[in-house]
Image 1: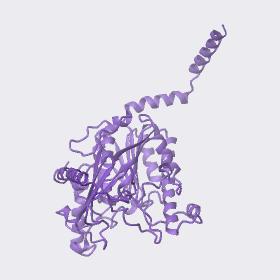
Image 2 (image 1 turned 120 degrees about the horizontal axis):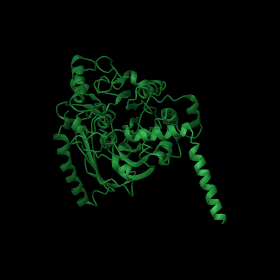
Image 3 (image 1 turned 180 degrees about the vertical axis):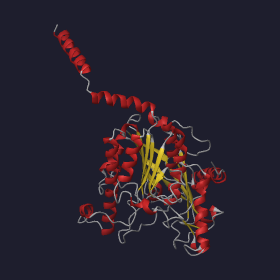
Image 4 (image 1 turned 90 degrees about the horizontal axis):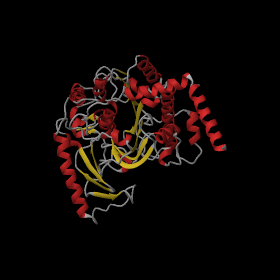
Length: 465
């Protein structure tokens, strides 16, 4: 009898609660229903020169990253993410287009002065324009999203001329030739000098009832390493060399700005229906003896410290939190965003649309990813292989790196190891200390053939708008 009375009481309480639903609760329900019908907003967060393991959620005991830790805990986080090219400009161009460097042809940061003349000379500026013009012949993510009514904002690093040239509706970077900056001019102020441009844009898009795309690529933790004293003081006195303390403080400062961005999405009620994608453009190992410089086998190199980065996809209305160890690549970002927006992925994009995979918590159906690297300075704008330094492939746990003799006039030590193939078992040796190529010639041959089969597809299939 007591059970029936208890059931009656519970039923009465539930009915009372249902009848007294607050306006706030009804509004939340309406927002949830709307999110199912409205394409998600999109924010890409790009850190700059950031080691793959310098995050709290990646197990670092050194650096504090609470905002990214929270994003990782709430989203779908791949601890084994990669960028195909470990150099700023080509890496960013891949994230903006979904194409490998050998497809979008933006393979280096600058034309080589040794070939094209002194910087800012007429010949050199003509070469700069030729390099930038590669962005004109391929579709960019903001251009593709416009199909669904998205408005877009560029902030931070953007090498390819004006933000308009990249297809953004608004932006901070005026670019060459209007401004002389190589990689962002006024855009590089974002984060270091506040977040108002981003938050104001988001507010306006919400007021206009428009889905939005934000490219947030602050010049952080990139050198110059000039963190606020209040953060730097946390790392000084812990036994770190001063350059390392400054780098760690820059990482935390960058993380703070992400917290401001995520808090704004939360306060405005936009977080649940906003797809936030996080990735770094390339890796970094801070030189402990000199500020603003890195050690070899990190940036510009095919080693894990150069090409590995965690990649996070957060869309609370559709993705459950997941920590995953499958391989993924930044070439997957564009097709996945298009999938989330309900836009057909253009035929020929090399990456995977992971939207349904993430939504349904399925495994990625791929066991091999590829990458390539070229010299910092482009020695032949009409022949990308003139600056080719390496190609690499990872199949399950095996990683093969092949080096080439392309010119890299920016550096005296080519930042790659010309000569014998390098083969590593990443499951046993994630820091690539032991070259197993000589002991495993069959694996080297098989993976080398995979690179041969892959590379002509990327280099000769030049996708255009």
